[in-house]
Image (tube, rainbow, N blue to C red; front, side):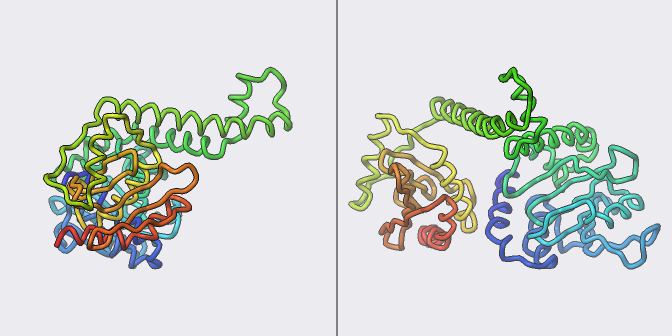
Length: 363
C-alpha cells in the first residue's frame, strides 16, 4: 500500500476501536503496535528494530521504562510513550520521555494515546526534549500536509536530519493552525475585539462583545464553508469523470444504467454526501484496501461501490430529500434496506451491514 493508504487503514481501525479500549496495555496492542508496524514499517517482534519496555541505566530513575524504543544501526532513534486511548495527552505524561531523551541517542520522542501522536525533538535546547511537539498527527482528523515529513521517519525512508531541519517550521505552523481552529470554534475576547474594531466604530463594551461574539463565530463558520464549497466546485468541474458501465446489467441494476445518462444533466455532489462516503469508506476499509472503495453520484442517490463496479454496491446515500436522509444497505442478494439517519454519525450504527456487503462481494 501507499503511505497515505497505510495511514488511512490504521486511522479507520482506531476510529472503530478506540471507544472499546479502556487500558494502556490494550491501547498498545490494538493501536500503537499496528501504527509502528503498518505506518512506520518497523518489525515490532524484532528486538533489533523495536524494544518494548526499554530501560536505560544511566541518569534515569531506577525501574522506569519507556514503552518502546525504535532502533536503527544498533542505536535508539525514536522513543515512544503510550497512554490509554480514552485519555487526553498532557506534558505531565511525558516524564519518562524527558529523562530518557537526554541519555540516549534518540532525537525523536513520541507521546501517544494510540489516536493522537505528538512528535517532539530538541529545538529549544540540545539533548533536552521540547515541551511542545513539532508535529501532531490525529488519526481522527489526519492533516495530509504532514505526511511527507512523517514518512521520513519510516524504516524505508528514514531521514532524521531532514525531519529535524523542518521541525521548527512544522512546530510553529502546527501551533498557528491549531490556534486558528480554536478561535473559529470558540473565539476569545482578543479575537472578537480584533474583528469588531474593523466593522464597528463604537467602544468595545460588554454589550458590544455580547452582540459581536456570535457574529464573529458565525462569520468564521461561513467563511470556512465557502472556502470548502469553492474548492469542491472547482475540483468537480475540472476533474469529474464518468466511469464506463461495467458490462451487461441485470434487472436489479436498471437504476444504475439510468445513472450513467443522468450525469449529462448535471449532478450536484454535496459536502454532506462526501462526508457520508468517507464514513462508509472508513468502515469498509476493515475488509478491503481503501483504493477499492469508490463512489458515483446520480440524481437519485449517491452510490458507494467496490472496485467502482455497479454490480458490487456497498451502500447508497439517499440525501436528496429536504427533510429526511437515508442510508441504503444491501444483503447478500443485493436487496436494499433504507435506514433513516438523524445525523451522519448514525451511519456507524450500520457498520456491520456495510462490512457484510463488502464481504459478500469477496466470495
